[in-house]
Image (tube, rainbow, N blue to C red; front, side):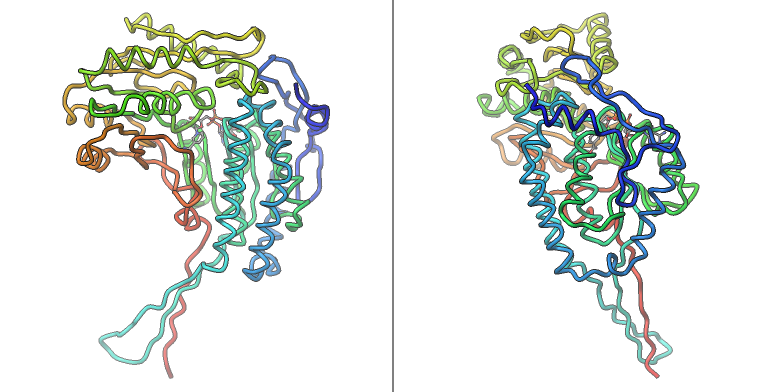
Length: 491
Ligand code: NAD
């Protein structure tokens, strides 16, 4: 199924990338690499110690201070970023295969997300020549001639901590603005899925980006993650992961007055009005909930259905879920692969059992795979009530909770009645219904009549327990730049 080169790469990947060199963890600690499609160990990664993280930050700090990098001409910087995009594009097949092996991501999804990562790099490559300050008119009441302007400067060393669900694309979302602004990066991937990020380290070298600009420390959150967050020479932490960890990261970062951006969990609502075109709305709603086996932060895992179409939607949704193919991630016909780990599979199954105990009606799709050693979960439609745990908490698996509503006001209130505020989806053919609903939802983005993939110029991020700050789009650059004012008094 997987090429020999991919298997070999995973076997040999147990090193950290520190200041341009591949090195083992100083204390020799390692963590296993598990294939979610079989449950078998297929390799190991280094588990970085606080000392390793310190070496990586020192390397990143050295380059951040080097004006050859921080003040590189925008023309050269843009060329380097395009060179990296070209290198990623040339290796797209290899990256997708690694992602599929390490995460269990269906190969078609992995290929598509790698192509989106190339687009993000190319989009960001257009920014270095356009980062500008502003001139500020100054006229004090006591007179005199003054002239003020601002410049935008890179903040220095950025620490990024990312989750396991879409490692390569999220790594690019952190790296691209670092490259565009002249910062440097110490990146800690998830201990559950580091392989595609380690491959990115090789590609960054191949593209000619200077040593020390990207450093990779694989390892645990408790050791490598905390050491990065607490390090005094790191200026910002860009964190993507769960809300519980994000809150801990923000508390720790406060001790050294670091900037923090938090891309956290979600429990995104989908509102399906009776006026919607069900032929397109039902598959879109299902796709939003089940993409990447439900392991996306923006998964539309709460589906509010207007009562007069409720039974028909449940029937269509259940049929759709039953037709989805659960199978080996490398089979191009697979819609849902395994989830990341045995622990995650148990967690999802516990949510489903507790919903059943609380009286929910379940409609499960067939799990038509012979791979019973892997961590497979069938897509599941749950007829739930708003107060049920399964309808309130992030499951991070292929589960959608359906709840009926009568009036639009009620749907908006139900959608907003959740601690998270990441994404929302509205399906209607009535323009004013779409706009009034979109305006009143407390989320970072509202998608109307479809769930298209991320787009490089569209910011991603949330509100409330889903965090603050943005990846992608010009908004993301703000987090990597300091504003300096120069005020000149004419003499
Ligand atoms: P997680 O919070 O368990 O781990 C995320 C990262 O934080 C990992 O690299 C982990 O090693 C590290 N970490 C753990 N404890 C730490 C600590 N004490 N200090 C520093 N780092 C620590 O999340 P996960 O299970 O890997 O990922 C799933 C979560 O990520 C879901 O909640 C999902 O919604 C969220 N997510 C959000 C977005 C977004 O853009 N909003 C995107 C993808 C995933």
